[in-house]
Image (cartoon, rainbow, N blue to C red; front, side, top):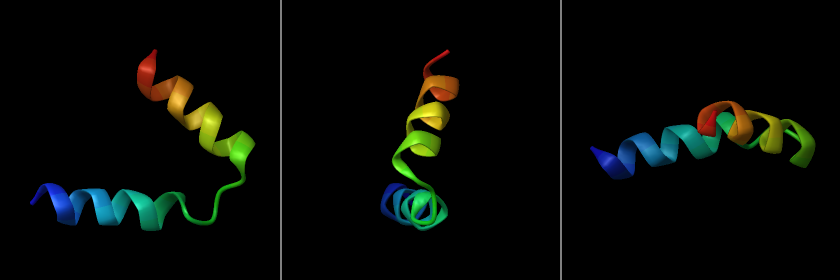
Length: 30
């Protein structure tokens, strides 16, 4: 299940730029 979820997350983030990825990470941490 973890691998599946991780794979889904990676696919979801694959199209984002580094800035978008960083902003998303900040939102998850906040």
